[in-house]
Amino acid sequence: MARTRKSQKRQINPLILIFSSGETEINYFRLKKGDLRGNRNIRIEAVHSNRKTAVDLVSYAKQNIKARDYNRNKNDKVFLVMDLDDARDGDIKSAMKKMPENMNLIISNPDFEFWFLLHYRYYQDNPACREPIEKLRQYERNYDKPDVDNIYNSLRLKEKDAIKNAERLRKFHETENQCPDLHSVSVNPYTNVDELISFLNSL
Image (cartoon, rainbow, N blue to C red; front, side):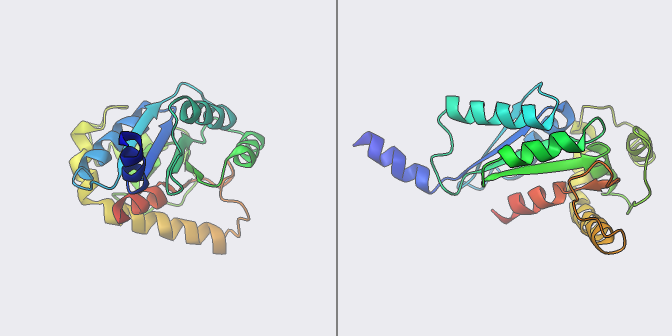
């Protein structure tokens, strides 16, 4: 009987799993989870993985889900968050073929700090690898990767601006650049972190 009750409860509590190989990403989403603490119908787990390639990240997520007996609810969602600074298109395409329907790839090109930068300004010029961090420090001098605590309040207040800027950039790549595949290292700069944030905010 207890098992049945647990199963029934599980059906109304979809699990949101966020996997990432980056400490900055993990720290950020743990803080974001704190913003959603009042929502009893959602549970977010940021699980750190040292796997670096997209294929490795997909494999790690699948193994972790199986070992912990996750994904027993059709509404469960899995998000894989990664940078594209050292990625290859072949690896990304292979990873996406291995992903089940409820698994989503969340990317930032060149790095996750580009998502932070969009909180302060719109940016579409192709940046060098560490340029987003340097430009971010023009607004947040105390930013010290991978610590997010000292800038998170500012990020939270400017979150709507970041979402708007990310949507504008996506439209730029789709229309003016006519990019057929946004999950490509050549689409730089780019991020779809806004899609994950908007999803979390909608819960």
